Length: 214
Image: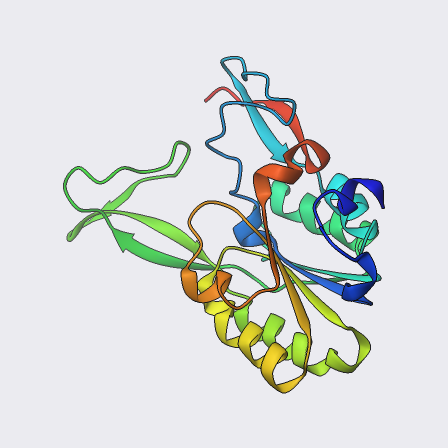
């Protein structure tokens, strides 16, 4: 547990049995704009950081007795299928459901991510935004399994989990560890016992990959 103890200060035993819940739809974007790798080296042009599913699972297992991975399935995307297949292999439990596509009409000058397909009809140009929220599933599982853990560990920067963390601490007497990145609402950070910035574990859970040419 050496790598994790450096990120979890104080008495390790205070956290007891830790169950980890990973909102991968949120976590998957933590490093997409990073310009340096986990060793602090500048990324070359064409390189990007990617979270390794096995690396993430291995890291989580250093401190967690049970890990749950939540991510949406897009049957038309090989990447989505591969991520879920790996997660099922390395995590204690993988929860998934089909991604919904929501039509979004573009305003003048609105930026679109590279690789996203533009469409058009009588109303104008539009794209399909993927939507697959696991807030309900994660909250239900966290409460349903609460008797099995002492500490709820969440990988997400989504402020929607503030009410859950408040309930687990107040009604269930649980400790809460948060791994987050980027902007995190005060309402979420204020309710946890420990907040660890995703940059602190970048070396353990990412690898460099060449961006595909379009």
